[in-house]
Image (tube, rainbow, N blue to C red; front, side):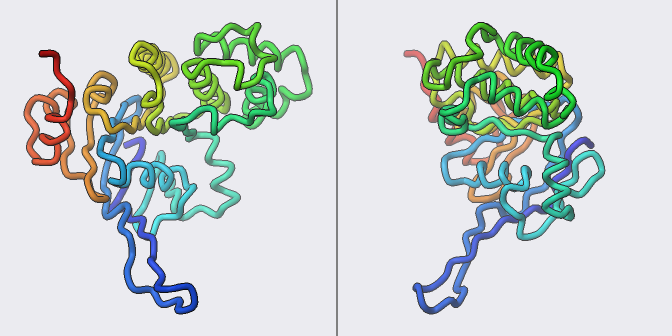
Length: 264
């Protein structure tokens, strides 16, 4: 398998008082997740706010240390790497966040943002201005952005355009795995479909593997090959997208499906 999660747990200790540093309990944000993801697969991770989806994504990214368990990417256990080794390896797995404006530096032009990301994988690009410009143009065109906008700043773009910039930045280091954490939840429905179609196109063109996180089962159904339903830090249902949608087994999955608006 491309990515294996083996009994991954991320618990946060609760301290009693400010002076008495005695651990009395812990929040089990991720509580024993085991999953396998194939190369080129899009896994939809779905659940309500607070179920542990974002904590799991940040644990996979090594932004939050796991309490126990193993995260194995292409045979390498990320959980056992040093911080320096993780920084080097992180070129292979990138993240797209829910709020692109918050994740983009407002003082950097799009050219600066993308050129910085491009030179992480290929430092030689920084030595040749024309090659770097060409790479930025190609990256912007790949995600459907007009290269003539490269000297603009994030606040000069719409929400959908900013999310395309965030996607371009994630693609710049040529990753093998993309984790998208609620990347369309803040967008209008018409723009959502454009971003979802872009992600599908990029998966096919670049043979990317993706984890797509959402609270909306209908969105996940459109995009994902397989769906994992998360509840209180655990995976309570997993399977082919159509099977999970049409023949849910767990009561929580049925509750999520019941919450999807329908046309009267």
